[in-house]
Every structure is written in C-alpha cells, then in structure tokens.
Image 1 (cartoon, rainbow, N blue to C red):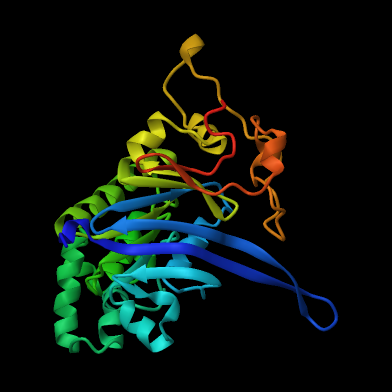
Image 2 (image 1 turned 30 degrees about the horizontal axis):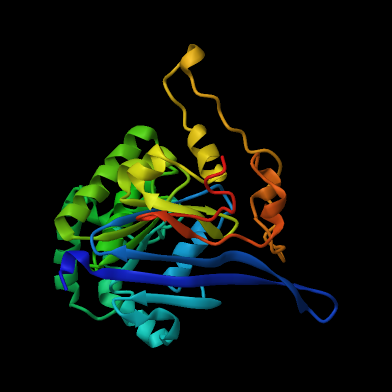
Length: 328
C-alpha cells in the first residue's frame, strides 16, 4: 500500500456514554450520550477538523479516540489494531504514537516543573533514553517548535500564552508520534498568536508527515487548517465533507446556520442574511428516536420524527444526516 494513502485511523460507530447516578442506593438512572455512534476514516498526513457548538461532544470524541476515556462501544482501529481491545499496558505503548495538544496552555503545564522537564518527562518515563540524551532531544524539539533553547530551565509562569502552547506542542512531538489530537489549541490565544501556532502546526505536518484531528468551534480556522471537516451536534456527526465542498455547498440546516454566523467584511444590501438557530440545545440524556436538531430547525417536518437520521453519502466524500436532503 502507498504509505501516503494509508488509512491510519478508522473509527467505527464510536460511543461514549456517561452514567447518571441518583437515588438512595446510587443506582444508574440514565446516560449522557456524549458521543453516540460517530464513524470516519483518516489517511496518513491528513487533517480532519471537527466542529460544533460547546457541548456537542467533539472534545470527548478526541479523548475517547486516544482512550483517555474508556470506550462505551464501537471500534477505534489505529494502524490495523483495535484500541478498544488493548489493555492498559498495551495502550501505554500505543501512546508513544498518539499524542494530544490541550486547549488551555495555562492549565496543561505543571507550574512546578521546568520547561525542559515538562517536554522531556515522557522520554524518561518510558525509559527511551538517558537523561543526557533526553536533554539533547528536548533542545532539538524546542528549536523545531520555535522556542529558544535557553528557555529550558525556566518555569511556565514566565511565558505568554503562545509560548506555553509551543511548549505543549513540543511535549507532544518529543515522542515522534504519528497522530496528534489538537483540542482547540488556539482558542485561548490572541488572533495574531493563533496564526503563529497554526502555521507552526502546518509546518510540522509538512516536515514530519503528521496526521491531525483538529477540534475547534472556529469555522474560519478549521477551513484553513483541515482537509476534511466533520460537523457534530449532540454527540453525532450531521455532515462530513472535504473543506472546500462543505463551505461551498453546506447541506444540513445546522451546518448552514453555523457557516452563516461567520463574520464577513460586507455591509449594506449585499450582506447575506444570517440563519439563526432558535431555542435551546436538547438535553443529551435519554434522547428520543427522532432528529436531534428538529426542535431548532427551520426546515423541520413531520417526517423528522420518524427516527434519528444517519449519515449517508450524497456525493463522493460528502455525507449528510438529514431526512429532507434535496427538499430545501
């Protein structure tokens, strides 16, 4: 198989439910369906962007794929092996190839550790090299991530948000992973710093052949950064397509509403009408068997009550979960 076309990650019907406990004997009274049956394939060297409003399950999906949360059901096949069947010891070895960049650069770094120890900790923890060799590797990785090497003995509180995020990226790169889950890595940063971090991630991908899952709520960022984009709503993917196709031809009413919310430098009559999403998001607890977006959708009809629609391919590479595709 051509390595560039290799399917490095195959997620099949992935589910993550959190139990709700109550009563005098603390029994399970329901489940929060944070991730409810998502499926996708990701080729080596590509980026899948996952977008959606807060609470849609995108961050939980990323953490569950890495087994930071236990999998309720489904398969996560990484390089031909189902991670759902791996023991904790086997997952420890797998995490050398799978890493995560966290959202908050202020909370994800241990304030009592120096930069050098933060970045190089995993090398020593996995007993991959000696302390002297680890220090050399840390210095090399810091240079790759645009961090001056004299920062190695400084502490996180001495750095700006952008510099801290570079430290987080260096920490994820130190083990030479093949897959990195980026969980809103620029949402806590200023716009100018966001561009620097995104350009760094792009350069690292080009130089090292990295594969990304890029989780964000910023549609402008995900268009720039991703090959394919998946839109999530209440734990499920409602639309998935190549980035250009999704922006040029959004089909699901939820995707259309999200895209219409992107600020455009247009004034007057030519400015497009914004599609508002009305009402409150439905509770993810014990969901009924109907379209989950129906109560907030301007295109809802009686047929939307007849079961929760699943993703179907309407053109090559373009998947939509909507009963009324083609009717509006």
